[in-house]
Length: 125
Image (cartoon, rainbow, N blue to C red; front, side, top):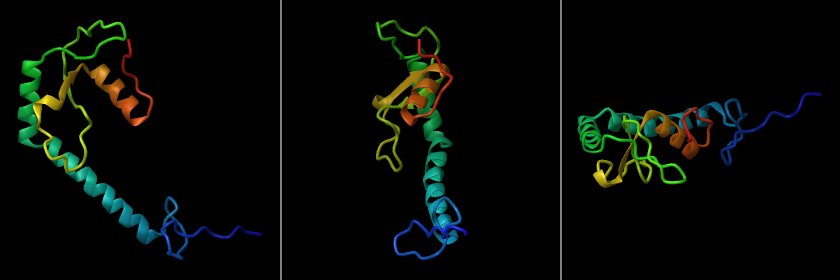
């Protein structure tokens, strides 16, 4: 005997779930929302204003700002610029220089992996 098909996880939708617990209609709606959020970040990071801000920050702060637990600095050049606190969609001031920190690529990768909860290959020394 076949199990009953699961219904869409959207409340009051009786349609069968076909994609990640949603019916085809609600799955495409959710994907459109995700793409809108991705588009905002992509436009921001591709903007001239971000390129100028990033370049100015790296020129003014050329070394990785990571510190070991005992306070030792990383001696690698900064190549990635990170927002602290993390940039959120439609942030009112994403170019605020006081929120930026420069990291070497390994420490930026490790920090991002820790923040987003996936395994990174960056250094943690």
